[in-house]
Image (cartoon, rainbow, N blue to C red):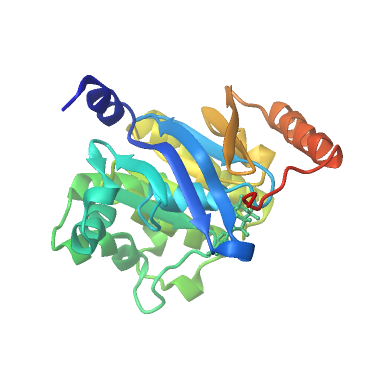
Length: 263
Ligand SMILES: Nc1ncnc2c1ncn2[C@@H]1O[C@H](COP(=O)(O)OP(=O)(O)OP(=O)(O)O)[C@@H](O)[C@H]1O
């Protein structure tokens, strides 16, 4: 391994290097990621923000091995995802990554306890029972363990999804608009849980969001525009994030950068 390889492979719970993602061909070609390099440090809560269509979901999907890059590399820890065959990639996603989506994606026939331990059951392991017990208390669902998702509020369902995402102590949890379907109070609860998981339980979270208030829960915000990483902000507040987003609107009103690849 060269010195450069070592540098690329050691920092961050997850990272992408020179990531390019092109969808479609010819007239319909879209360069959703246009040379993005970003690392998501272990033990930190990072939010990905940017205007609609800037590539946030694409970045998350490629970093998490849900989609493949056209060029560049994506790493979870030291593992380059592009080197894995489908079976190994599936196992890596199951064992090393947790997911929280906008639509809670719980299994309706399983109760809360079964939904939380589903990734462990699929992996054929009991995991760490003490960790699971602690998680159940953190998300405040001990008195709902035998309920089915349909018997829970949206906020409670998303708290189950958060516990499920952390159940196997993954290297990183990716959350895609986790508060998009929640009222502001339930959203705050879920964001508070993600923050506690990072600060009190030494977890790593990467969250895509449109919402400056949600982004303010992160340790750092990375901003995308037109498929490029254009800014990073430490110790964000909702006002600071909102101001940064307004600057995108102003830049766009001066004349939007073309999304299509010049031919
Ligand atoms: N499967 C796909 N096929 C073709 N184009 C796609 C596909 N997925 C995304 N795109 C395009 O890639 C660009 C980036 O999309 P992406 O969903 O990553 O942006 P985003 O920042 O998450 O947007 P939003 O905030 O609206 O969800 C957009 O121009 C989008 O239309």
